[in-house]
Length: 267
Image (cartoon, rainbow, N blue to C red; front, side, top):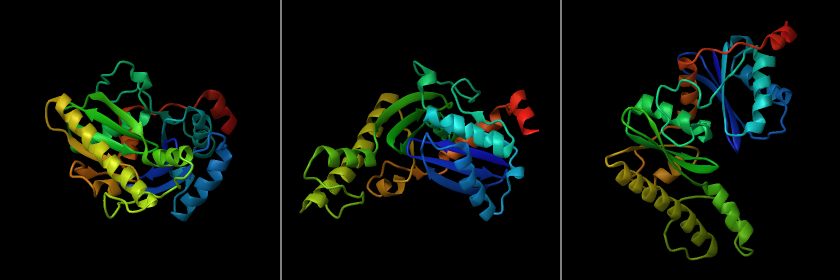
């Protein structure tokens, strides 16, 4: 079985794939100070509840945009699953060109989304990921990664609005009844929701124009279903796209070996 770890700025997702399907997905808040033992106590208990055992895991792969979290995530794989994880980075075999100025600067999650989206939906397409940041990643007909756009995420914008304006409350995101809010909260909800719908439509429209042809729009992230209600631009929602990218990357690249000193410690 494969243990896939997707470490974002807000949450770390652990998932197990048995070669046919995802057997479990578990989410914990990202904390760079969290130790490998803390991860293991939490993860092994959840795996046991799903009928899974550490010995069944034979490979591991990590994709992270939080470099400080990598050490302890790697230790989890080594100490508790006796496997050296493949770490997603630009230097691996992705099966496509990364046509940007500095490939090493591209977040692993964006390349993983591009890999899975092209594999499952073909190109050309744009992947919209509603995370801590809202990212737009463009993949051409042959799967090459062309770059994209990065905007503040919705929750980040809501928090910034609350922090910067003394009289504006912290609100939850939801689709408002009307664009014209009749009170402060309704006005804020309208501005956030329809503002982001406008952001999606505007950037996708500009990307399509610049690309010079049609692009399928694939969305992922927790808020994708909510925002898809407000626009015709999003053609498909795929919540597993980053995990799928990790699985596909693992299939394309050989399993790294445990360092000899680590192997000696575990024996």
